[in-house]
Length: 333
Ligand code: CO
Ligand code: ZN
Image (cartoon, rainbow, N blue to C red; front, side, top):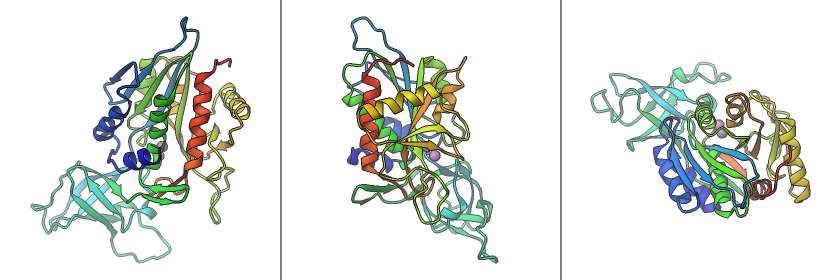
C-alpha cells in the first residue's frame, strides 16, 4: 500500500485534467473488476458483481476523488511572469516559494509582489509564477494551462507526507479494497471521481448514473492535534474517522451506526468526525436523484491542501479493514 500511495501521489491530476491519474488507476484495477467504464465527465467507474448465488445485497457506491488542487494561468505579462487563479482550495499562505509543474512539463516557482505588511498573507492575485521566461513570447505556457504543486514524497516512520495525499491515499485504499475483496453479497461500484476540489462535481454524475442504494465517500479530513490547532477531535494515528457531519452533509445516522458497529465488532480503532469546513463526494451521492443514504470514511490528514499533507499508514490500514468488513457482510440499516 505504501508504494502505491507514493506512486499515485506523484502523478499530476488537477481538477478537470485527470487523464494521467485515471490511466494509472485503471492499470491497477483492470483484472479485478467485472466491468469498467468512464463517464462523460471522466469518472472511472469499476463494478464488482455480487458473489452471492442469489444476489440479496445492496448496490453500493464508493467514491474517492482522483483530482488534486492546482493553479490555472490567467495572464502572462510582457516579461513572461504568470498571473494565476486557483483550481480548488489553494491557500495563499502555503503558496509562496512553492514549485509548480505544468502538464506540459514546464516548471515554475511562486512568489509575491512586494510585501509591505509582514503580518498579512497576500492574496493569490498579488502572487505570480516565474517559469524562467523573459518575455511573453518565450513563456512555455499559455492562458488556461494548469499546474499542480510539486513536492517530493517523504516517509517519517509510519507517517507519510506528499502533495495530493488528498485524495490519492483514498484512491490507493479503494484500489486495494477492490483487489482484496472476496465474497461480498453486494454489487459494488468503485468510483474514482473527478472535479471534487472545484465543488464535488464528478461524484454527482457518477451517482446519478449508478443509482446506488447506499453511498460512501473516502476522503481525508483535518485534525486538531498540532500545536494551537483548530479545536477538532480527530488525531493522526488514532484510526479512521467516521464522519458525522461536515459543512455540506449530515451523514445518515443509520450509516454512521452501521460503521461504528462494524468497527467495534472487528475491534478497529475509530474516531467520530465533525468537520466544520469542507465536504466530500458523499454530499453529492446523498443528494442524488431522490436521495441516497450516505456516509464517509475519513483518513486523518495534517496540513490539508498544502504541498506537504501528512497521513498515518496505520490509519489507512485500519480504514481498509473497516471498509472490507462493511462490504463483506450483509447490511441492515
Ligand atoms: Co481536498
Ligand atoms: Zn479531498
